[in-house]
Amino acid sequence: MNKNRFETRIQDIKYQVLKEVAKAAWQNDLVENVIDIPKKILPGKKPSMRCCVYKERAILLERVKLAMGGNREDPNIVEVIDIACDECPMGGYEVTNTCRGCLARRCTDACPKDAITFDVNHQAHIDKEKCINCGLCAKACQYSAIIDRKRPCENSCAMGAISANEDQAAHIDHEKCIDCGACISQCPFGAIMDKSFILDLIDYILKSENNTKFKVYALIAPAISDSFKEAKLGQIVTALKKLGFYDVIEVAKGADMVAYNEAQELNEKGFLLSSCCPAFVSYTEKFFPDLKDYISHNLSPLGTIAKKLKEQDSTCKTVFVGPCTAKKAEIKLDKMKNYVDVTITFEELLALFDSKEIDYTSLEEIELNQASYFGRVFARSGGLTEAIRQGLSEIDSNLEFKPETCNGIGMCKAGLMKKSKNLQSANFIEGMVCSGGCIGGAGVLQHFGIKKENVDAYAKTTPFKTIKESVDN
Image 1 (cartoon, rainbow, N blue to C red):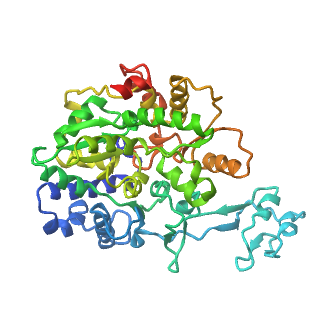
Image 2: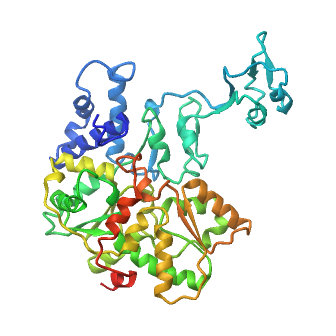
């Protein structure tokens, strides 16, 4: 595993699958070779992690299916690979060996179901059949000897969308899931994966006949300024064109348009929830439906810039390249499906580059000067708030701007909860489900070491001093 590229072996395996699928697709022999991809990745007879190499290859084959788009009739983006799930121990409260068998026995007194007993060594034990997981015993223990043990996937999901099925494998309740992808990186066995649509992208590029039949545009998220750290952004732009794209457009340009329009909408309505993070929008609609009318009526930056391109050329194909798994669900919505054709993540882009042996670190740079500082800082938490503040000043609004920046799902939940109970003093809520903002999305190459400073440094290279300059250009 290349530690400079990936955080875990799981990410590396996912990358290898995506690369092999892409290589076969470029050569137009995927159907004939799909069954051989697991053997290419694991050519030997010795297992690396599982009980046998045959099970490992069976799991790889399931990964291949998801890399090819999975079941196209199933709208869900994040899926559990049942055969890969190690059936981690069930969660719940457990007594650890920190228990001293003390005389106080506050845990027993706190338990409303008499679920705690003591053995001959005075060690506490919890009867799982009686326990209701209220947690009162853990709070009462002065030694912190009782812990709430949860599966990593379950622990990562703030929506409570993950549980165990009848076989004790992980199960996703898609009525609750917001496709944020937090569970994907947290599963230590790689049993959860997002569907990939790289085949759709390859198909568009091949059918475009070098962009003579129709043009294929790469719409890059501003979070790309904190990705591919071994290269300059201009080199990535050049690599995208070598991959087969006609042109590369900054989604930050759409962010400028959204910031300007949302500032006007906020000025008119007096209160607004941001519409830029699809996971935040989905979370609001599913868990706080009474607040959904407060969501900005503007499309997200992606939808806004893609719509503009489609209005100029209805035959073009638009491909979002970013850090977000929730975008794969967003583009299927009625309000988006006519504007964005495919979404891929930075993980998938790396696999595509390598599938065509494109060494982006050796390429010349192509500069992008399409967006303002304010559109580009949408990539990190607080950037949207900065942009709305600037937008209000540019439209000469007299509204007193009182924003609340919600960084991560926990803060999003708190902000929406306060508004639902009329305890919210803010008049604008910026909701970013991923910690740190888009630069912390599920589809980035590395979650550790993300830096908003990289976003800000790139944002400052723009020639545009205001949002309106960018929008009018």
